[in-house]
Picture 1: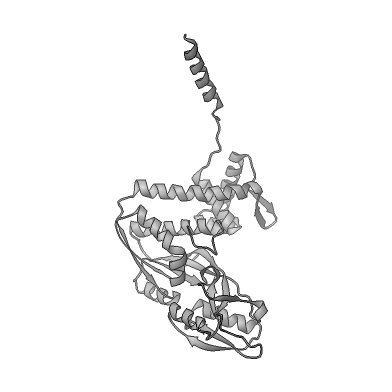
Picture 2 (picture 1 turned 90 degrees about the vertical axis):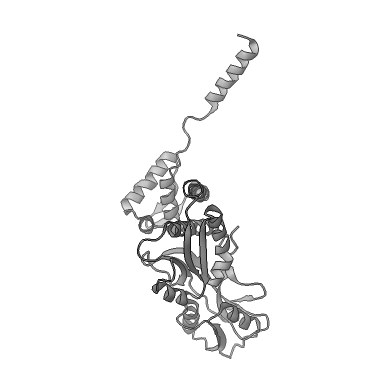
Length: 318
């Protein structure tokens, strides 16, 4: 054999031997369960999210840890914390699951058509949802999206009349029934730069009409600290509320990641109490949804879970 040929074959043999024979087995089913447990900090709540029993979820996490040879969760009584290895895995797991879902849609169902009627709160739809919907439209160019932005109570009313296939609404945090929670809504007090709050005067509030969740939170927070208040301006339009706040008519409540430029955050320094978070939930119309609607629902849930886990709650999705 010629020397150069012998060297080439030897080099090839060394390359073959250098390739690991046992790579970490990333089972996507296990990764989905792992992400659900990490997001919910609970085996029980994760089991409800993925539609399995708690014992099955526990076994899946054990399989994942056995396959990796690493612990991904520290269990101390009822507390469940990610290990350093678990934190690393969570970042990659979200990316892998998102890419897998996108690839599946592009390859297996590129020709899905029809229309989907989606309702969403205006601020959430413009700040967080625009890029999510754009990615879906690129993957499914034959699906026509009919998106309506409105307050949650109006969306729920239309939903009850069959006007939507899917809606995203703001609500009080609750269990897994009646919609899937997809976003934690951190609430803040917001005012225009012209407003001056007097410590001995009722706080002027700029709010949507009842039964808006933000209105309920604002009034409950004021009552909790016995701070006097008055309704200075009411509007069923988000644009109208923000215009009133910019003009200095009063204080309103907004999601922290959706405060528009030119408005300022207020808090304890101004005598205003903190508020617990609300949540954004996805509701599916009863009965059998079209394939296009099911795909959009899955895309929204996975995209927002990835964004939430990546810490993008105060920035626009990229």
